[in-house]
Amino acid sequence: MKAVNYRITPVDPLISRDARSFGAGNPMHPLKWLSQTVIAGAVRTTLYKAAEDPDIKAVKQVKIRGSFPLLNERIYFPRPLDIVKSSSSIYQIKPMKDFPVNSGANMPLDNLMPAQPDSEEDFKPEKLNDFWSCDLMVQWLKDGKKGFSLNDDDTLSAPSHDERIHACINPETGISQDGNLFSTTGLDFIRRDDTHKTFIKGQISVDIDAELPEKFTASIGGERRLAEFARHDGDKTLWSYPDELPKTFDDTFRLILASPAIFSNGWLPDWIDEGTLTGIIPNTETTVKLVSAVIERWLPVSGWGYEHGHTGHKAMRRAVPAGSVYFFEAVKGTLDAKNLWLKSVCCNEQDINDGFGLVLIGRGE
Image 1 (cartoon, one colour):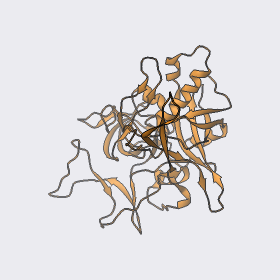
Image 2 (image 1 turned 135 degrees about the vertical axis):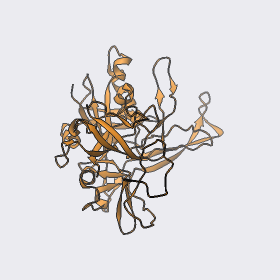
Image 3 (image 1 turned 90 degrees about the vertical axis):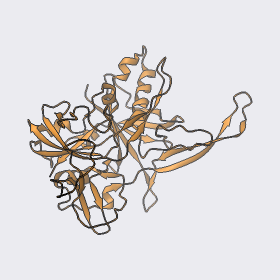
Image 4 (image 1 turned 60 degrees about the vertical axis):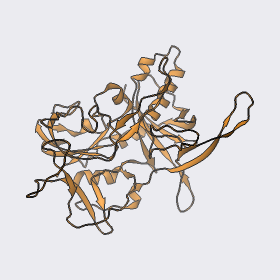
């Protein structure tokens, strides 16, 4: 069946942390946003508990896309990494055409070009908010910095942190154990404007072969924090391909990760050959050449399994962070951008089902 859109309203601050261990004396390291495994686990657990004869294999095949911040009926995406801002100007990071004479760069692969801001002046980049509205993102994808204006009303900071101290309780006596304290850090989704109004809504799009209730409450992430799910079919337009962007690309373009991606070759997509830097984008017939990439430090991804025989911490994996940008040149065929919008470019089936590697598409030059 087609994707069913749900809005998630957190009841409590939600815990979504990286894969580093924590406990007594070790602080928790929260992520900026809910990880794919946290959302997928909440949805699949709900489906498993609701089924009369649950099938774990069928539940794991449920496809999840999202979640993305949704505020005042506007959807937000992770900020792209190919933009930097000084105190007075905005610069776009682009692949270099050629190396300057008598110069070079230590690149991870041969023939991969470095990327740099389109400015020769020396400046200190300013910190930018973590999320952009869809309208602002479309403007950047369409024209880059040409006529681009960065307004705070179109950006969103990551949820603030809610830190709590917990005591370890002795199950036999029911009292706390001396010296056994640990802290947790949750993502607080309550935002207040100048009039002290509160508002927050998250969104999740789920591809399922069995209907979920119109409304239900489920635990999400660590400490079994609660959130309310509500079906909202009107959100489908927020996920659709924008009319302002080209429908096809047959020259240069860039893919921006809307969610972290996991590739077997680390930062390099599985479908790109290391020698020729060419490959076919998944679910398309377009052969492309990788020109350059702008990527931040890898993101540790883990989770908690409840599957029989595999209960406990899942192995840590390295993910390419959301917002990372890959620059491509079409070698053969024309890319149908509409059919790739917010689709996964990962190759592992379970990673695709979990919603890793969703992409946005924009002009390359």
